[in-house]
Image (cartoon, rainbow, N blue to C red):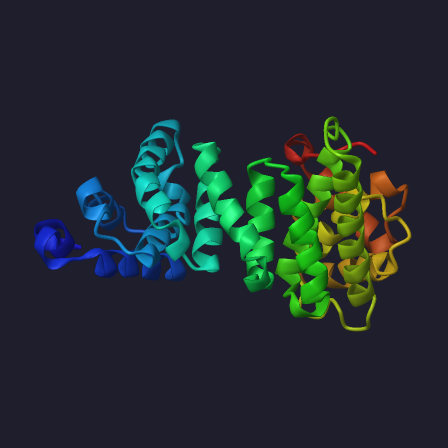
Amino acid sequence: TATAKKGYNKAYDHIAVTQLLNAHAKARVFHDEFFLAAIDWMTPARLSTFDAQSVANALHALAKFPELYNSGENLKQLRAVFATFVPEIRQRLREFKVQNLVNMIQAFSMLGLREPEALLAEMLGELLQRRAEWNTQDVANLASSWARLEQWDVLAFTALAEAAVALSARAFRADELATTLNALGHFAAAQKHSQAGLPTSEQDRASAAVLAAFRAADDRLAEAGAFSKTKAFEVALLFNSYAKVQLVDAKFLPAALAELETKLEKEPLWEAAASLVLTALGRMGRLPPPNLERQLCQLLMGDEAVWSRMDIVSA
């Protein structure tokens, strides 16, 4: 840190700075002096020397640390930093790898940056042209980012749903599958209220693609051992995702509830997961198994403040 503070102007180039940022992000190590020194170093003049990989690495690393935007003033400042990257992103748009583009959209979404809309549209357009290169991580991260920004682009989500089927549910890690289906579920719910003006053919294709993705995942999740590597929250997220699209006949649902009961013996239910489970049960008109019901009751009755913090959606 002392070196970065005293002599980083001469000792560092864009590769060194962004690789250090990326290393800190991967290790989840936050040092405010280093990050602030790196941000100060990344002036518009120096950004013009960055290659595509360095641009993507810097934005992705900065967004990984909420400490940099945990207040209104900090968020405003970091958004201003992101704005200085916009010309470089546009200039190098076709130089970015698919993962770079997905990581940058994810970074913008984590800061709640919906502007400049034209830039996000350009990045999305480039990704759609290269959808054959997507892998499961790309699909999961892009879907969750677009949902976080509440950008319900029909072509984008249709492509994501079709890619999820083409890649096969077996290829997805548990967290990737849960994240993807959660985003597709949000999209399906949003579409119910915002289909005006869309061509019927686009609406039908989007609906069919989302349904196909959920059905394909159901076949995988209904297999024995499907939940062996999942966490309780991921199971709850999957359960709630199917509730969003009203697939109450999904084959994996009984196994999911049974798995939650089993996992709760070692992994106590926490508020976010409980909220998802209660919401899904209400939407589907289901009762929880005995042990799960006990856990939910203990959580809700143990502390009145918990109830007030939980985000429960009525059926």
